[in-house]
Image (cartoon, rainbow over all chains, first blue to last red; front, side, top):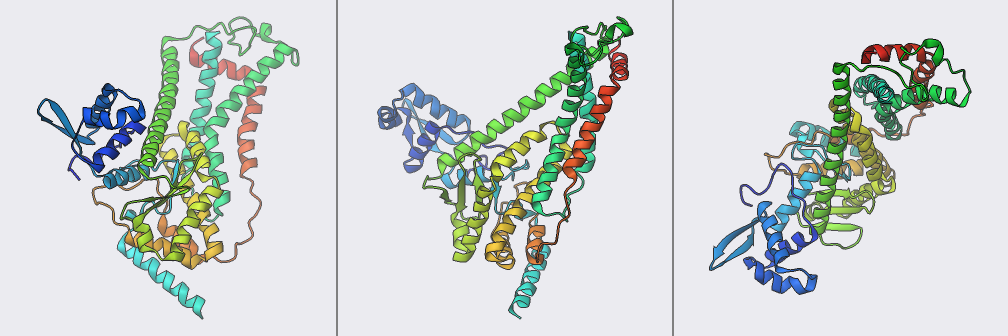
Amino acid sequence: MTKDSVPRTSMPVLGDLEVAVMERLWSEPEWTAKGLHELMGAQRGISLNTVQSTLERLHRKQLVERFKRGHAFRYSPKVRREELVAAYMQDMLGRFGGDPAASIAAFVESADGMDEATLERLEAALERRRREEDR
Amino acid sequence: MIGLLAMFVALCALAWALAAGAAQWLSRYSFEALPPKRRLHRFTLLALLPWLLPASWAAALAGVALSKRVGWIDDHCRIHGDGHPHLCFEHFPAIQIEPLAGAALLMVLAAVTTVVVRHAWAALARRGRLAALLRLVPSNGLVRKIDDERPLAMVARPLRPVVLVSRGLFDCLDARERRIVIAHEAAHLRGRDLIKSSLFECLLTFHLPASAARLRAHWRQAIEERADDRVARRFGGADTAQALLKVVRRQQFPATVGLAAGGADIARRVERLLAAGEPSAVSRDWSTVALGLAVLVPAAWLAGAHHAIETVLGVILGS
């Protein structure tokens, strides 16, 4: 994980094509826009310009990094897939300081708010309950 | 016409201020002793208050105006003379709105527009981020497994819900505990909790930030406890509490990440599960009747005292 990638204050929205480009970059880093277009263009019916602007957007969202080799920019992912998924999940759970989204319900939301003493007290209570049930 | 609109806006603003103040005060109570279902009902009523009170006041006075128009009550506008600011659809109030009052009304309208746009924008952004997350997670039916070492489980997306479960959760729980977690998420699906939560979030649009945050937290606590209760009926309270504690024990989040303000209180959920016995008899819930009276009685009084209200609004707006 790069130091300025995740966590961030709010995660960017990614469209279908952006995710498809990221998938390609994760499977094999260092692609030029032309190379990606040759691979995905005909299949998805998109032009080279579309691929270029998608890469530009991903670069602005700090999800890919680029460097010039020869005359063309080469792009590679700046975050790993698992990191991005984890950051989205944290974002949805409101762990960046906001409220959890109304469109999710998590089994555990704020475990990091529970201190060790409370956890031990609850585990002891569970033990007591187990012993009572065994009797 | 503008005078009439200004009077209705001023009336609704007054009603909203009263309702938002009442909701701010009442939202301090979490009604912990009540079963989750009844609490959800009560929080819904509280969330409705800033919508219902302005609507009922406006409806009461509009009702009077309409009744005059269709001849159900005498048209007494002429008795009061032209100087009186009538809330009437035939004799529009001939009031000169003071610049200060006009500016205040414009600010009210701008504030309402800003709040609505801000909420809609935030909701759209959250929806977009959820869609992005789901695009990144391989699709294989209702339950989707996430390659994340932390033990996480959630149900997401109100209309076509999916259950997201992390690899870390599968690794740290045994088969029975996994079934408990999935059953918990399924309980949310059966209860249509995500749709209800999304609607509840819309109702909070016109609440003051503090009362909205408190009501949101109470609501989330109640839906989690209701799902816990459903799971506990099948697997037992102790087993459910154990799965919950195991996940809490294993959860390790980066220290830099902030704590969710609206998250459910897990300690209370565990204590409830461990203490749960036979449900005690619950008395009849009068909260709907109480809210109905709180909304309808002032509205009926306003309809009767519309002349005084018109005078007050006229003074406020500067007739």
